[in-house]
Amino acid sequence: MDFKSILVSWYLENRRDLPWRHTKNPYYIWVSEVILQQTRVAQGLSYYQQFIKSFPTITALAAAHEDSVLKVWQGLGYYTRARNLHKAAKLIVNQHDGNIPEEYNELIKIKGIGAYSAGAIASFAFKKAVPAIDGNVYRIIARIFGVFSLPTSAQGKREFFQIVTDLMDKKSPDTFNQALLDFGALQCVPKSPKCGDCPFQQYCYAYRNNMIDSLPVKGKKLVPRHRYFTYLLIRYGYYTFIYKRQSKDIWHSLYEFPLIETDKEVEPIELHKNDQWNEWFGCEKVTINYISDEFKHLLSHQTLHTRFVIVKIDSIPPKLTSECTMVPTTEIDNYSTPKLIDNFLAAEPATKYFLSTHDKK
Ligand code: SF4
Image 1 (spheres, protein in one colour):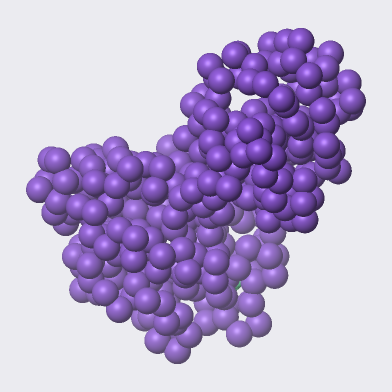
Image 2 (cartoon, protein in one colour; image 1 turned 135 degrees about the vertical axis):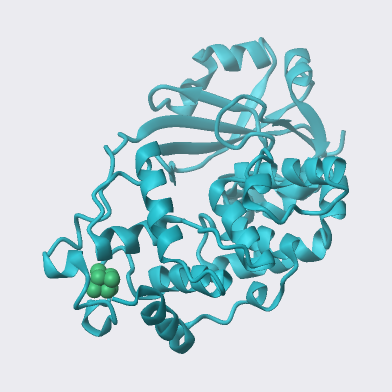
């Protein structure tokens, strides 16, 4: 089978017209690939355009404050991608004079650039013959060639990398890699691939052996963790309280409201018995204005059962101000917050009981 010819012929007829395909600017290519790693093209497009508009060059990105980078990223999820992109941009400006290296082996040394991004930048921008392997590529190769190694294992990664390197069109590695990505996104999709009109059908190991659902091999499924969040939207006149998440956990560096996390569901009217509540408020009078229903927010391997509780206080509890920042409620929108909070702030209860209340202080 002439793998690359079949693939490229398919690509020339079916390829997607995407803005970053019309540029050789390595910075634009890098940004687009990072955005697309865990995001569908339809959703990623507007973020890509906004990101490039806000930080038109790698120097502009490196000079930006992390909060403004996260603000542009807000709603896209997997915020580690944005933080790594930002860190790597600073490093490239400081150590490479702002010039993104051309070679895969140089790119991969930069903290924040992974194997996939390094392959994508080197091949798409500089036409270097190196694979850019993401989940699409693992799936295609495992199915067509009957590769049973686990793509997430070190040995599996090496094996897939070698297979793709051997298959590559060394003269047009950019077209070859893009063709693989599009083939995985459009034809050999995870569920119900379009085998009926697939040009690889007669060669495909998974199709011939009825093993499409078994390839690629999947690792053990992680049991999702359940967490119980109660966010306190505190009204103190024109002000409220927020803080920046610092722990090595979800949403690092994003802002949120004071959070009470428990290992099981807690009734909001019982909150006054909670240790964290007592630490923050002590004997201060706290009036509960609104209690939301429970929202279930799904993250990879975590389910967050969340309630928002709007409360009013008449004086500032010292412990609360030592841990949180007091900000005008109307300025909340200036801070990058997780999508879960964003969604709640856009809904009617928040507008009615929180954002539009301007008690004079
Ligand atoms: S025949 Fe089906 S499983 Fe095999 S490569 Fe084509 S679309 Fe994928």
